[in-house]
Image (cartoon, rainbow, N blue to C red; front, side):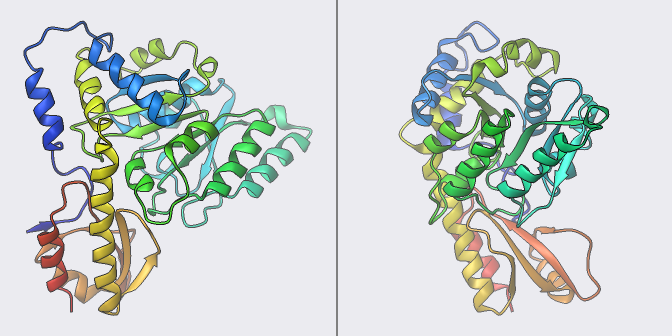
Length: 342
């Protein structure tokens, strides 16, 4: 059976595993105070072009989003995001559980529009009763989005300008950031993200690590007691060096980008084959997630050979499906999947 369900089905990149094994019996202080974690923080800050940023390591994406958003917002504030955003759809109310409302905006292939963000913020304070409502205290975006789409540099700059004009932080969910940075034709770099976002995270769980996300705070005064908040959320790993070693490895010799580029290449090979077989692309994603509209009978036949996701409710005769590649996807598996297409 072939597997294209998600990008976290395998363990970790062999180089990450090798470094964890090499250091396994070393004794180091806990909670990220070890030398490996210090070195990985320095590597990440240099790679992002933000030497004065603070870097924190958490274990998973939902945990990271809930902790960061809780830290950035005052008690009366909510978070703006696309209606399809992960925090709105697939995090089981984690943000609301911390006492903050998710405020949704229209989505455009998973993205939010800077003009609509501006309109929302401006109209909110034009309402004389605004003090009775949940104030928009920050903007959440993801790159890539839930549909595998990417913001252009111009779009990201416009969003950053709107947020700074209205004095709210811009936070980027980077669960699949490596696959966005490695996509063909993208004009957004890690240093652009470091320049334009107030807080973002670099996803490791889906891009070569056993687990872990690296939160980069480019404006540290926004999260002055974040270490304590991480602890409060149960997100502080005692064996912190396990995170530091993994990210130190991923950010040595451009490993993070190299393995992400492999995933993108495999996804585009799959996309090309689906198109050649006459299937409709549902969302034109340049990253490792690919979405197609397929007849249900073809979906049922293909599921005898491979696992993948139906994206949303099953239709009467056609449904949307998602195929995901990752750093470990083997080209021969992609070719075998293609051979089953009809």
